[in-house]
Length: 322
Image 1: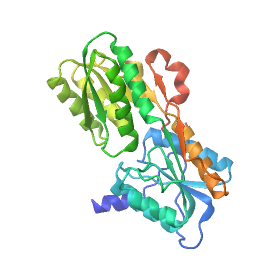
Image 2: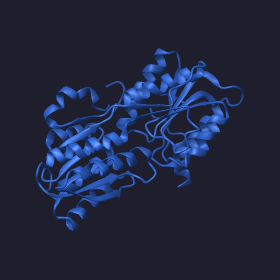
Image 3: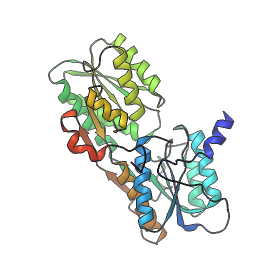
């Protein structure tokens, strides 16, 4: 496992053309250099964020490099932060993989004079980052509840939330918003959340297990991309595709295909490219003596098969060249 962590520390997201970070450390920070540290490598949400960040960095005259862990895990993200610290870029844009465990490593960046901007996820400690850009995730959970209620109509039954990992600020906020909003629909019984460890196989097995214990299941809200794809597999395996309404979060190529073929009934979609762009903008402000905006929420949209064509600009990318 140690070898995997060390390997992850050098893993580079190359989907959007990033290159290796220079090895010269010490001295003042390089004010024309930025590093993006997403939550996990090779995920369309973070690739789309990287594309937006790279385009904006280029437009503003910065060199932006990207490194990401192989898994959404603080033990794999921490050594990447440590490696970046030695190179002293002017700013780091980071999606912390744990809202507590990443506080120490990120504070080291701040103490070294590196401007820290949170993109997507954020720490509980608000003293570390200068700015946090994220979807309004609680609102996204509320939107998921309203969307699922519309899909269900007057039918009565149970609904399940599949969450990722406890301590992930974004998905925990989505579940919170969903749990509060679903109370407005008396015909729907919320049976709580289950964690999947951001693993599609676990999501699939938990859906099939829930169907066995709750035959009145009429809806599932999956709080992120991997969980949604796994939930779709679980429903397909159980022969319940379309019978149990599946509302996913995000719009990966697989999820978009699932919306087309009926595996998903709706997607709550973010705007990761804008999150990346705004992250660069806030870092640029900080590096030029301006005061960054502390909290910046970005919009979400609910997409169904009926309106997916007119909302295709929100679909996530698998590479920046596509």
